[in-house]
Image 1 (cartoon, one colour):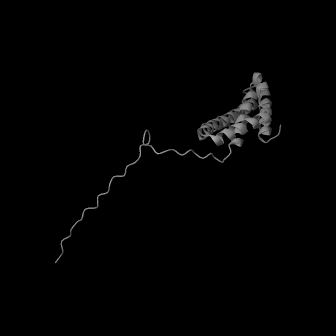
Image 2: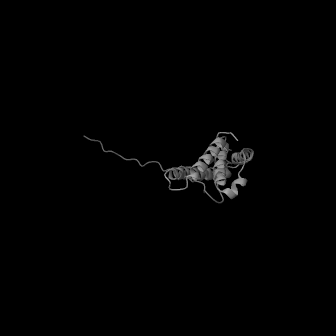
Image 3: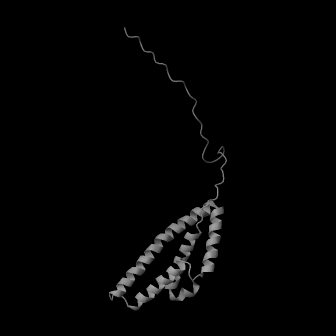
Length: 144
């Protein structure tokens, strides 16, 4: 004969209270650790892209930064990013946005040079843009 099965209810557990995410009773926050990864090279590359734009606009050519200024500004921004997580996040967002803009500007320069070679724009522009790209490339590689 089969014995009857008896079911026992599971033990009752007290609900787990989670602290509120905001307001009184919230657990103390722990300051974020400064990041060890340097952003200096990315900042320098972005500043060089900005210089490239300044070089392309004749009235603004005199406003371009030299390598000493770029290095000093990049070092200062990197130091602040290491100290402040909020500043770092904003800076990383700006670097991401300017990276895409830099790609678009280089593609536009290359396209304009090809148009000059096919007679769609004045031929002199090809040489001028070539010199501009060479100057930007030498700055990115550390030459002045």
